[in-house]
Length: 173
Image (cartoon, rainbow, N blue to C red):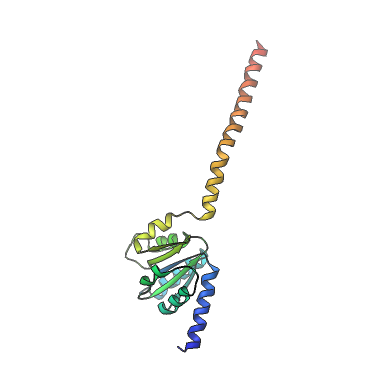
């Protein structure tokens, strides 16, 4: 590959990385054509972009970014596929679903950059799949804030019904 081509690929990778908030480094090497096609289809349906990259070019693209991605560089060995998403836990859930109960099946998680935190190792897959996205956390917070107000309104409504029943009973006597 010519130096100009490499520069173009690095710029393209930087653009792709800039479009997504989270990315996972995975190993999908050894998957046959049918399984790879199934994985790509599942990624497309879940709005996860899957890109197979050269390790050295990805490393140069990450080095050019403002954040410090140095802990990820040790994971850039062997075959690497980049899974990009704007939802932090979407690729982890996708990987868990795709491999099913066979923990040795591919894709293997190498590392991930989620919510401005770096996770390294396949043992982080369970943690990543249980992470809540920013929108889910905001939803939980709103629900918690609404709960006391709902309880007050509910108590007032039930109290009104009870009071009405008591007055009706007294009026009938």
